[in-house]
Image: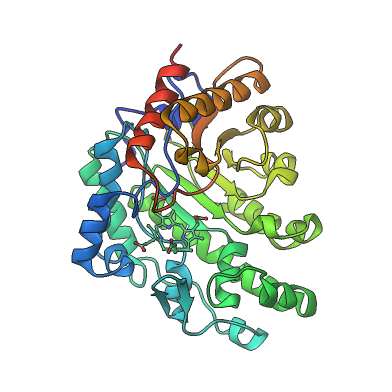
Amino acid sequence: MSSTPANDRFLRALRREPVDRTPVWLMRQAGRYLPEYRATRAKAGSFLAMAKNPDIACEVTLQPLRRFDLDAAILFSDILTIPDAMGLGLHFVEGEGPKFRDPVRDAAAIAKLGVPDMETELRYVMDAVRTIRRELDDKVPLIGFSGSPWTLACYMVEGGGSKDFARIKALALNDPKALHALLSVNTDAVIAYLSAQRAAGAQALQVFDTWGGVLSPAMYREFSLPYLTRIARELERGEGDARTPLILFGKGNATHLEVLADSGTDGVGVDWLVELGEAARRTQGKVALQGNLDPATLYGSPDAIRAQARNALDNYRDGNGGSREGHVFNLGHGMSPDMNPDHVAVLVDEVHAYSAR
Ligand code: CP3
């Protein structure tokens, strides 16, 4: 299971080793912007039916790799599988996104939560990882992932997406002990979940702290950072070439780059509100960096997309002492359903062509 993929640029970049081209993958590279995804989804019936069927999850994981010269695959699943397995009752309401039947809003509800069993309650995820690894046949590495403890808590307390995070912020202010209990059980679950994905064959792991950036710096240091750090320190992931690298992606994490670089993670994912060169200078070569084009760049013309890609590559190199090492190219957040697949090809090919010079 730990064999080196034929294309190991992504893993090499995460180890800050020299690469022939800068590796690139895109958050949400599998999804509704692809007509073949929409066709598979129409047959399966719903997103959850797709994610819970390992053969379909495998099929949609591979769809973007058939079209584009991507350097990594990412497991087709969702961050909300953990709270679903904890019994909160995940479902999707058309046009409204994810919802929980039983949100957790107080200390009593939080005290009832436990870490789900990975090979029973979350077996469908591990089966998807095993199926994808077999079908990928070591062409490119497979990324497993999880939500961050804080980001999962946002959905668990709000009961779905939120604009103002009123309920979870009120809980942070009024009963911080209860919120810490929730974050603590989430952290145990995330560590078990990522370990199980690694055992099933995931070759890199990413934590999505999508909502860390809605916290004030002081609240981020209290409610998100310590739990990300615990994951980076406690998650067993091997040594040297056999190491399964961890990437901590955070939307709006620019204020915290220095502490994230000292967290014990292998890579840090950043959004487009910070320049890669500045991020490279501030993290001092302690971690690899992943990012960071504004996803809206894909609404631009092919020429505009190429120019933005070159700027990002040069910006990183200039801040990294003239070297392209340690950079994984990505967007600063996920793709949207109305994006043009042809523009993705333009971006991926330009990253490879320009960084090879
Ligand atoms: O990157 C990939 O291609 C892998 C698959 C992936 C999905 N969700 C598939 C998905 C990943 C990595 C996620 C993570 C995820 N899920 C996050 C963190 C990343 C981020 O974008 O910040 C979050 C916050 C979620 C929660 C979630 N799941 C939301 C808000 C939604 C609704 C989105 C929407 O556009 O309706 C989902 C559903 C979901 N997860 C879809 C996909 C492809 C849309 C499914 C569909 O309707 O077909």
